[in-house]
Amino acid sequence: MPTTITVGKFADHLGQHLGFSDWFEFTQEKTDRFADLTDDHGWPHVDVERSRNSPIGGTVAHGFFVLSLFMHFWNQMVVVDKKSLLLFYGMNKVRITSPVPAEGGRIRLGLEVASVKEFDDGELVAYTATFELEGREKPACVAEVLFRYWREGMFPGNVAV
Image 1: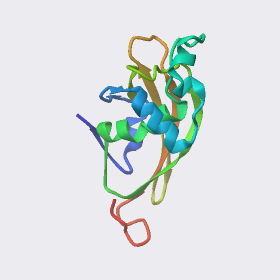
Image 2 (image 1 turned 135 degrees about the vertical axis):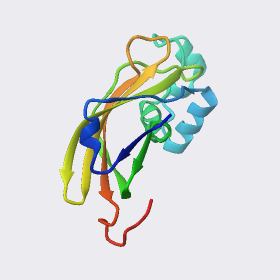
Image 3 (image 1 turned 45 degrees about the horizontal axis):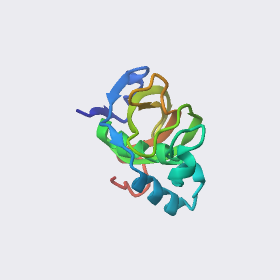
Image 4 (image 1 turned 45 degrees about the vertical axis):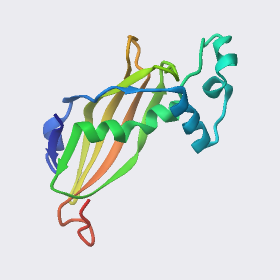
């Protein structure tokens, strides 16, 4: 069940863990498609035989593939009320801490409101995003993800999203 947060009230959720997303399972086919989209065909990601015989023991998903799933997970977890617009603002402190197997690796997102900066027209919110890797104590990735929110009626043209 997603958490509903109203723009202007994110500070009420500061330090709050918002729960976990569903699990996402990687396949070699998905990893190969990501490689095609990004033109990153490094052998640790796409060469099954070479990777199997290497210290990593098999192909691994791209770190950027893991990060790209943030919105897929976030949309399962958070509903923002009373907004006219939200924009992805950036990421801080991104660390890829465990390789994700390209075939059968499963991750999910744990999310926390880390900080809130208030403006007259809305807020800048930093989330701590922990991409958990099933079966491992160490997460696949930890990042601080930033979103800028504008209150209803505060964005020029009152664009509804």
